[in-house]
Length: 226
Ligand SMILES: [Zn+2]
Image (cartoon, rainbow, N blue to C red; front, side, top):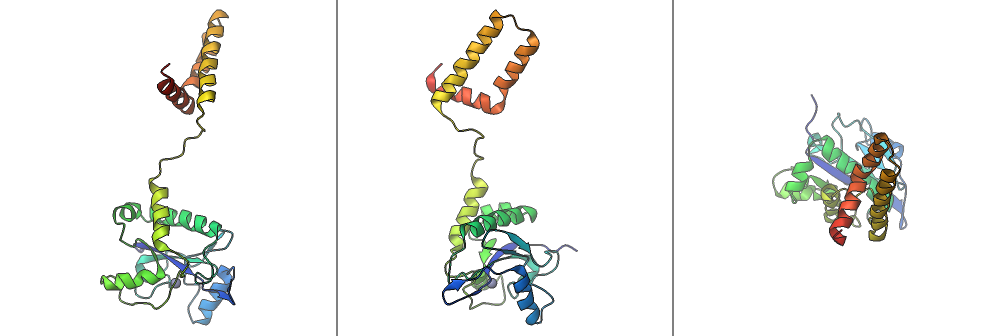
């Protein structure tokens, strides 16, 4: 039976020394966790400094990430040490993308958006808030995913990514839009004088009705009053 995932949890490998954070591999974490007597790595994925995602424990199995809520959680571990160095920009980007993919995969996107304080995406240390709410049994004294990882900021970035309208597939420029409009008008006029076959005009109309071309021309007409 598939387990029901309710939260995505961020972790740090807490791997560093003398002020330097290390680019931990999933294989290293797997070895540490086996040395602890576990079957295998406890996290579902590990995200390296360059943003590469390495697979950990199969998410269909129960992970080992946060005592007391493992059955209902998915665990992302970031290489390095979140008390020593912030996530690299590539880790942050990759982590946000992977978290969004998992929110969608596990049907959690609506809950994430509708419950801003629901900790649907959470840092390991925030299990203490779940304990306070009576939603988890075991508190932690860890700072995981690290003092330099601001989970409120990360949730905000994910929220913005999920709610932002898709960027248009062109860059609007009123001068170029005017040239496109005038140019098309000239082509239509020349085609009529030349009595070009209907087939040729159909191609021209297809171009004019292509969604981005249409959007550019309609915007230019609105703004110029043509
Ligand atoms: Zn952790």
